Image (cartoon, rainbow, N blue to C red; front, side):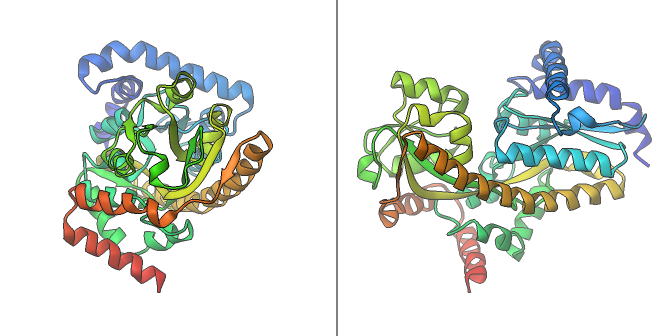
Length: 371
């Protein structure tokens, strides 16, 4: 059974987790002062889900008296394929555990941005995130190499790479660092493309432009390699930033770009495929290991099932969204000099700080799945 001492303190721990999940800081004082707001956000999200007939666990869970609750807090927008897949994962785990393990899902970054959520996870909160490997670099730097530009050649390589000895080694390293990735970063997050106000066919077209990128070193370096000026405003502020001329272009997965209506302010989507991006379902390893063994196995099994149907949903969404964008007056620019754009790969590998041994191991693993 769940450890008695942990069960006795579960109420207090969950209260702290909820407060921390919505805060902008991981300090105790910030968590305490933000508790009421976070609880209100949680209550509002659950009520909204119930009212809309949402299929997420937050809307349908019937927890047992001694249930363990974990909040799946992520920044993906409501309505996109990834969020729908995450809702399915949460619902299936909750139902398969007969309510012993409840996964409450919260989208749209209402519980904080990824850096905040991941910090809470590292510090032991009962939280999960669907995070990209670059965002766990502060805790285990090696995994971020999966987020170097042009790492994968296609989305099909993601599932194959997941099973390599090299990736299993990375997963163990992350676990030793205190974070459990349930699916070993085997989730296909989407091909990342550039949306802009003019066609972008080579790095020359990006020179001097203000390029919105997330606040992580890999993508900042990528923008610099292309001669652009990286601007790290939040994705939620990017639409207005494009309207006001604060930024000139943005990159993200196709589905996320459309879900945030970027097509209204950028009339070009440039098929650069600079990332076939991967994400992983992460949680604190001590929290994971404190669960009953059958619940641990359930989480791993459902996370690996998630990777399969999520990939199918994301690929289908990409095709559908491109058609919708074109119908709404967006030009799909496929005339991109990919070899010229790969200057970003060379620049990031040279400047990011990964050990040459790590780069060589990654290359060997990629070669093994391409043979």
